[in-house]
Image (cartoon, rainbow, N blue to C red; front, side, top):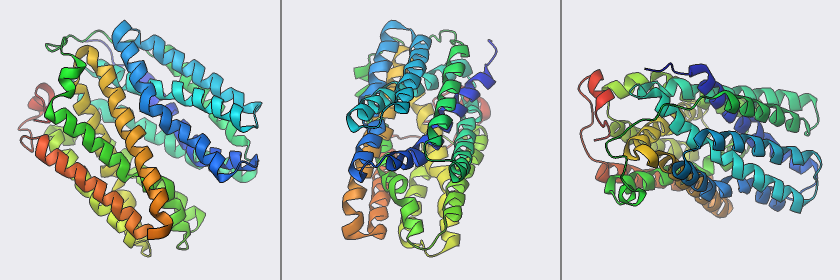
Length: 395
C-alpha cells in the first residue's frame, strides 16, 4: 500500500477553502469601495456560481478522457491566480466581469478532481476523508477571522493581497500533490449515461440540488437577518464561526459514524436536521440560544451531508467516471441548486419576509429527505467496521 500524502492533501483543502473564507464575505466590500452598484456587485459575484454550472463538467470530462488529472489541477491553479491578478489593474465592469469569469472557470475546475484524487489515495480507508477535509474548514475560519481583522485596520483593497497569497498557496500545493496509483474497478467500463439512469443516482443528485437550494437564503441573507434583529457584527461573526466549528467536529467524527451507520442513514439525519434548522432560523431569531442551536446544526446540514454525499458519488461513479461524477455533484448542487436558492430567496425576501423565506429552504430540505427515503433504499446501519470498508454502505 502506498503512503498517504496526508499533509499535502490537507494543505490543499486548507488553502482552497481559505480562499472562500477571504473572498466571499469581503470581496463585495472591495467592489463597493470602487463605487460599483449593488446590481454590478451581484452580477460579478454570481460568476462564481454560474461557472460551477458547467466548468467542473468540462474539466471532469477532460480528466476522464485524457487521464491528465494532475495537469488539469495545476493548470487550474495557475490560471485562477492569473485571473485574480488582473483585479489589481481593473476598475471597470467589462474587464472585471471577464477577470471574474476566468477566475471562476478555472478555480471551479480543481475541487472535484482533488476529491477523486483524495479518494484514490485513501483506497479502502475512505472513512479518513473527513480527517483531511476538516482542514478546509480550519482554513475557512482562519481566513474569515484574519481577513476581517485586517480590514478593520486596512482599506478594502487589503482583501486583494490576502486572496493573492492564498491562491499562491493553492498553486504551491497543486505542484507538490502526487498522482494516486490507478484503482481498478470491476465496473470500470460502465458508461456515465448508464450510471445516471440508475434511480438511486438520480435521487441522490436531485436531493443534493435540494440541499443547496435550501441553503440559498442562508448564505445570502443570514447575516442581514441577524443584524436586522440587533445582533452586533461580533455576534454575527461568532455565530458563523460556531457553525464551521460544528462542521469540523462532525468531520472528525465521520470515520466512527460511517463504521456504525450507513451513508443513507446519515443523509436522512442531515436532511431532517436541515428542515428543523431553517424553520428555527426563520422564526426563532429573537432567541440567542436558538441561533446557537441553528449554527450547531450546520455540522449535520453541511458537514455530515457533504462527507456522505461525496462518498456515495465516489462509490457509484467507478473508475474513469469518478471525475465526472464529482463534477456533476458540484455543478448540480453548489452551482445550480445554490443559484436557484439564492435567486428565489432574493425575490421573496422583501414581500414575504425572513420567516417564510427560510421556511421555503426547509421545504427544499424536506423534498431532499423524501428523495433519499424513497429512492436511496436499504438498511440504516452497517454491522461491523470491516463491512463499512468493503461493502456499499449506502445500500
